[in-house]
Length: 335
Image (cartoon, rainbow, N blue to C red; front, side, top):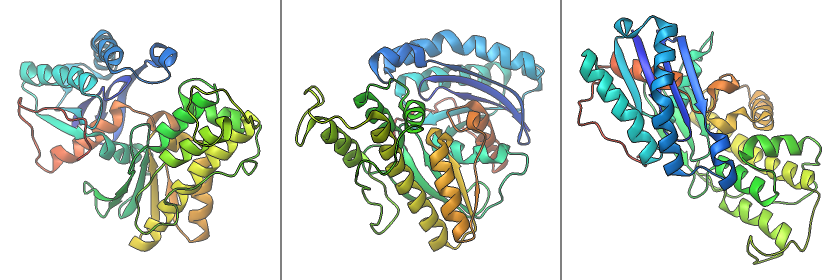
């Protein structure tokens, strides 16, 4: 089955064609330069950029993959995400499906991040536990068989990627925060600044990163201060970046490995933009290996938002008989 995937859930405009788990064409157009002055994604700016970039990306993808006549179906991200950007992608997907008489299927963005692992040359086989950590979400799934995604836990407030972005903003490191923190942390001591690990040792599999972000603020400004207040204590930027990164990686790896052990599976799959972080990968591999668990993760270009993973998840849904009508709608929520 040859599936065209479209993803406009946040600030990447992406189109891909995938056939039986093999990428035939893949185009991603980022928007970081547009949002950098604001320190985060501005939904209205993102939606307008998608309008400008989606059709050129679609034309390029089809040209690389043999044209629209070779397509069997259309898959598009419908949730979760920013509503304006999601509607741009969905409108294009509906138009293609209607004009060319192709089946249409809506895809859950977080499940697509898990499915990105099936694009590996030697894809992991279920059962496994999957950690998806991104700018907007941090979740743990159990995948007992191909196409089934059972939610184990999720963040109760800020996502891991959001914490990276906000800590980077506090430290004046720019946007996007994840790569900026990782770069600064290379010259820092990850144990120099004591920071909390919220919910690390709590029962269950939920996450919380709001307290960690606030702790970094207080390290810089003093207790019970605001972001706009002047710095009163200034640890070395590299040390604070390294310590924050270590705290995030510690929580993610501990929870993920614990989930895999308790669910009795021998594989752990990572996905989402935060899974591109070298320290997160390293600590997950180290802790998993100590208890005999294999860790798999997609290449970095497939960790961030992309349409190839949407097409793969679409393949799963289509193979199970799922089809959506032209009344398909979007939602900002994961559930």
